[in-house]
Image (cartoon, rainbow, N blue to C red; front, top):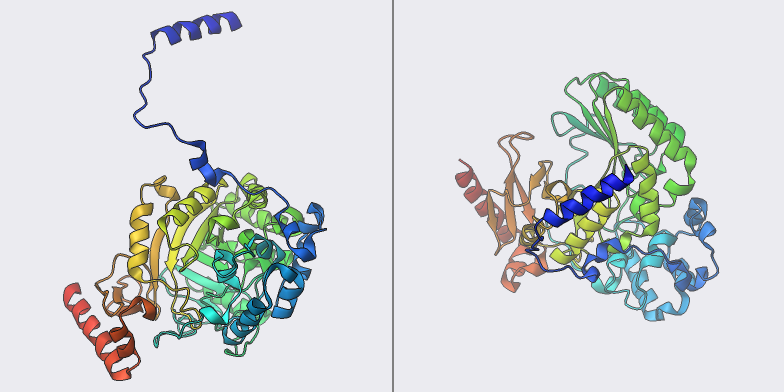
Length: 467
């Protein structure tokens, strides 16, 4: 039998025509997204140069050694940075609306030879020298999540979907957090609306969901679902799955991007998530994870090992990025990120233009930049692994395709969107960052009367064009 197959193969090779390659050979170096870091990169940090792999992968060690202050940052990185940088960080802490908490995993991935330009540092550690004055239209709750909350911590905006904010803490605190009004500790700039774990609040949310038969999709977020205890994962998952009309549950967590070792060493938490996912599958309901990688440098061999755990348990993972200046605002970066995520079986799902959050003007980009990058990204890989670029319309309009504006005045930086299926008849405005505009327009925005005139003019054009 073996010889027969061999003869057939030889015969086939003789009659097959020569393959003509229409594309030039690919340089292996061009496939860099497959080359994931598997070295002990954390040993370059002075405080952790003697930490072995087993210790570094212990989620409890990661939590214990998280950096939460300039003093702790200095104790960790020591002479990798000059004292002037630490002073700059101290100034950044005073200006930030978010508390600072960074895991050793993230901190060790930062290029400390050039921290000002590093895309991970920009996301998590503020520096005063890069702070820019807020656009006058920036707020703390720009998406009006509280206004659309019939129960504290439960936002019901879309017809068939609700967002359940189960708690208000995270393993790390992102500078760009859209929920800086509630997440994390109070800061010098913001006194938070607290959404702590509360059984009564949770039960009111479950009751509301049960009384709304149109709801099919629940996003379990916070804060961060990584912070939920295994028994809380089970309670939330089983309670929602037992509601007949609920068809989909998404556990939202940045954890795989900033603390992947939890999936490798916190077996109880992973088992609880798997139990809920298995129950959902048996009920023909989907339970998945939505996570949050923003830059290719965040994806390592540890990430791959961690996501493999969920993949082999049949749990789908999708990714939602935030489009940020100096982080991922180039086509090359976003293409590499999408390919790298796809390589570890994470589906790129959304890319959000930065929300209108106070204290983050240095991270925001104009809508035009997002549109330009999306155009380049489209076609670089398979369609189902290509994210949709969206503006989460300020004021509660929900997610709109970035290019689907009714009107966009690039001179004033105002883009106007409608949301017919969410809030019909209303118009929602997004505002490009001030320093992307001319000096004349920047000055106009500081004058309330001129600012209102620019907004009303844009609204009037949008309404005329939408008719």
